Every structure is written in structure tokens, then in C-alpha cells.
Figure 1 (cartoon, rainbow, N blue to C red):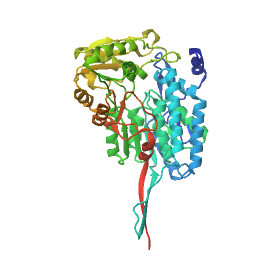
Figure 2 (cartoon, one colour; figure 1 turned 180 degrees about the vertical axis):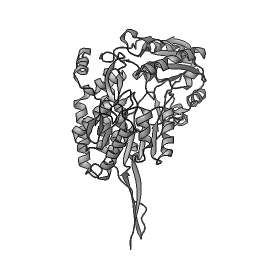
Figure 3 (spheres, rainbow, N blue to C red; figure 1 turned 45 degrees about the horizontal axis):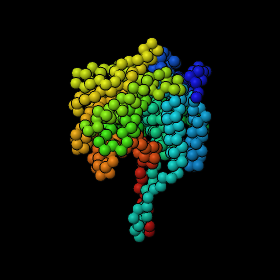
Figure 4 (cartoon, rainbow, N blue to C red; figure 1 turned 60 degrees about the horizontal axis):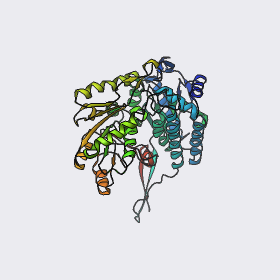
Length: 496
């Protein structure tokens, strides 16, 4: 196994990306301002990153518009587009360890997760859409003697992508890859907590031969750079993953500007339901634990609500706790670490604030609830489990975005389905049962964009990803994502 010293060596010798990528050039912010980039690994400042604002956004959008209008990318033959995108994927594969170290330093995720999940997932996403870009066909309308009609899909123009800090590179690629594959230009605004892999991606794209201006990466804060991008009159679409509060602002900004399209992938309070006839209690307990504790619980589809049928609840919870007790926070750059740091001190304190709320609401703390590894200076919380969480309790209704599991019990399947749907969110859900009829009925009745049966997170890039209700609208992944970055045009030719 590669050692901690190996990854610390990489971190010590690589140049940490810090400049914006605008119109094919690496440059500081227009004002010269920069902000401190703090690693959650030990709470230290590791570099300073260009603090871009409206002026930089305007320069990036202008570059993206020029690139789109002169056709340097959208008018390339599809074979050339594929060659460049595959070249970018190859460069990402070449620099996989560098990208993984940057990701781990920025957000505190275990280096092994970055190497086995985030980076290869981003590469696979890029290759998937590169391969798919020449397989999008139009349609021919009903035939008549005096008219021939058909449809074509054309790129929108300039796409603004605002992406989160929990899976910075992977989530960026879910938006950048299909947008580029459809022939658009992109302005990517990474979260201020996690700018480095996005900036490295911009550099690699230029090395791969992507024309200047086609992919611009502009770091900065949401209130300045993000808002300016969303209000810009020459941006045709905003694709966003993040919080519901910001999603609401983006909808407002669209109405205040040019009615640009908005695609939102927002929060979740996803239930995992374990029925008494669960086919494999050990597998269900494993997925119940890692469904919430993977990536320190900082996952929009985290299985933060566990609903267990009363008949098996005590025995099942014992199995889950045995697994959870073995999940120990560790140094993110240590290859053996499976559970890393929270992204920031602020996120850590927000998560810890739920402990008092849960106790006040009558929940029983069964595991964890503490900040740990304090001497490291990093932002670590141990896996935390609360039992007997009431359906109306804050912990059962609000997205913590941390390693906090809320366990509730139910008597009958109908009660479980009612509890599952008793939320403003509708992103993901899972259920465990041998009953094929119950499985199909639950899959239909649960109001969520993703439903997994006898597994958790059991899908990949080929299946669409997105939610119902206040979890947003629009879909990432699959061929459906390509279509949202295009306009559908109908053409009719009169035959004389």
C-alpha cells in the first residue's frame, strides 16, 4: 500500500493551483485580491487563491461567448471533439495522484476515496460523454406530401456551472463534460472551500488542446463571483449543485436577468427503510452505516434517516453499531483512513449544534457525538447515531450534512412509506425486503428521484441523477444530462 509519506511528498512538491483560468490564460483576480485556502486536515493555510468577482466573471463570460460564436469548439468535427476530450481524460489519469492529493487537502476526504471514487469517477464521466457526443440524433416528423419536418439539438451557448465542495472534481465533471460534449462554452465556479481540482482541470484542458475560452475556471465567493455569474445577461444557463437557500437565489437571479435556464440539484434527507423480511441483515447494516458515514456524511444522498421495522429494530441496530464503532476518523492523507475530516470549522460546528437539538427532542445518543483529533488542528467529528428520533424532530427533518444518523422505528409498511415521504426533500431512498410486491409498490410510492432496492447508491453514470420536491429539478448523469445543455429546434421544409 502506498504510504502517508508518499502522499505528503506529493503535497510538498506540487504547485498548488491558485490562479483563475480565463480565455486560455492563468491569471490573478482583476483586483489582485486572494483568499486563504485552509485544509481541514490540520486547519492550516496551504495557499492563497485568486478572489474573483464580477469583473473576472465578465471577462470569463466574454471569452466563453467569443469562443462559442466563432465556432472554435462547437463547429469542430465530432471526431476532433472526442479526441480532445479523451486527451483530457488521459491527462487526468496521468495526474490522478496529484488530483487526489489536491482533493484530499482541500476538503479532508480520505486519500483512498479520492483515488478510488472521486478521480476515476470524474474520468469515467468525461469519457462517457466524449463517447456519447456523436450519438445524439434528431427526429423526423410525421410525413406529409407537402412538407418535410425534422428536429435538431443545438448547444445553448454559455453555461455557468456552480459546483459544491463535497465532491468537487466529480460534481464539476457531471456538468462540464455533458455541456462541452454538446458544444457549449463553460464558466466553472468552484466552491471557495475546494478550488484546487477545478483550477487544475482548467490547466489540463488547455494542455489537452481545448481551445481558449471554451472552459474558464473562476474561483471566488458565492456572494460575488457566483451571484455575478447567475445575473450575467450573456449566460444562457446556470447548472448548480448545492444548498436549497442558494438554489432559491439562483431562481431569483434568473428572473432578474435574462430568464436563463436553471438546473438545481439540492439537498436531501434520504430514508433507508429496513423491513422485517430484509434478505440480508448484515448487508443492510453495512449499507446503513456507510450510507451515512461515507465522505463524513457530506453527501446530498446520504442515508441520514434509518427507518427500521420494530420486529428487528434492536437486533439490527446492534449490527449497525458494531460496524459504526470501527469507523474511526483519521488523517486524510493516510491510505488506511476510511473516515476523514469535515470540510471546514464552520461545517463542523454546524453539525455539532445538532447534538443538543437531538437531545432536547428526546432522541437517545447511541454512539459518538464528539469532536475528535483536536490536537491535529483539523475538523474531525466521530460517527454519531441517535435512536428513537421522533418524525417531527429537527434531526429527522433538516439536512445536517455531517455524520449523524437518525434512527426511527415503524410497525407496518404503510407507516414506513408515510414517514419516508414526510419531508420537503425527495432526492434518494432505499429499502430492503424480500417481498417483490412491496418493493415495486414502495418504489412507485416513494417520492424521490432515486430509489434503491436491497442496496444503496446502486447505480452509475448511465442512470440519471436528480430529485423531486425541494431537492431540485433537472438531471445529471446519463444521456438525459446531454439534452439539458441543448435547445431543441424544429425545422419544416415546404415541398413545392
